[in-house]
Length: 208
Image (cartoon, rainbow, N blue to C red):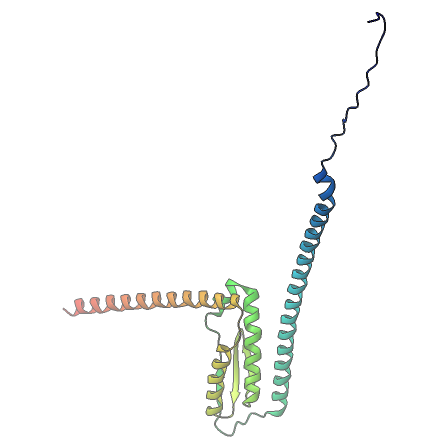
């Protein structure tokens, strides 16, 4: 060994942390799959929003068409019908049960109910020769030339309302409102019975 002689040794060191063969071969496919999934999610959201908007617009169009048809039928009836005061006729008063409870629970669903209800009332009254005299809240005042026509109107209106394809939200709202109304009615009946019993007991004691 010669003193004072410096020997150089060169070593190749990979400091970049080379990629494995798996990463090199499958990385493009993984990126492609992620992009496809992201595009699918975006398309699903866009399609869902589009379908929801379409259904909402169709529903609004249906209600507007029903409202326009009912109003035109009402105007036509007013022009063609004449109220005869020289013979017997019949006045019908309509009212939606527990309408205040329905309105307080959901004004949006209540408006949906009113729109369908008013359209059915006006179309049916026009078909049977009825004349709309006035409206008050959700109620109608209708004139019919005879009691049979008025009776048929009342019966058919109930049937028409029962066969309407109400939305699940409207059905749920009505079930809730009417069950609460029945409970209140039962409470009122119980209070009346108790009050009547108390009065009868007091009267019997006074008679003795």
